[in-house]
Length: 134
Ligand code: HEC
Image 1 (spheres, rainbow, N blue to C red):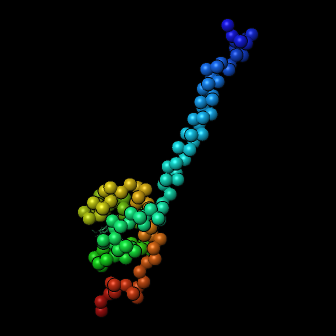
Image 2: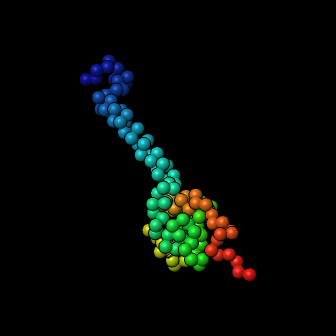
Image 3: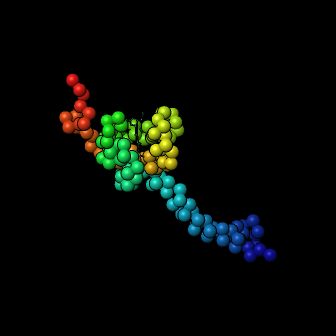
């Protein structure tokens, strides 16, 4: 027998009350989880710096290339750097060296590295190692 005289009005059964209580607990959690990737995708200069050691042998610890055969990265545009890293990884930009250097990089790490190198000051033209020869 229903508690309510008219069974059509008896909408809040103990079972649905339980479901509502569960939803009240789960929904905020789901909201937090859904928002996490948004925060994780923000590029981090400090993380980029921390993982840039693997690039330093060629591109220099400050993004200024060790030998002039390698490109400087310091002060380059963030979007450009990120795009090149993705292209190297995907093999769209052909470079065996850079393909192997990007193979294990997540998109987040590429963003961090791009942010780190973009944030460094570019080499000055007058003090550069690679002045044009006359
Ligand atoms: C063994 C040397 C070496 C290492 C280590 C290395 N690179 Fe490179 N990188 C190169 C060379 C060589 C090129 C030029 C590729 C080409 O011929 O297009 C290059 C090109 C690039 C470019 C494109 C620059 C431009 O002006 O278009 C980016 C961005 C880059 N590297 C980022 C990185 C990052 C980030 C790391 C560390 C995860 C790294 N590289 C590690 C040798 C290296």
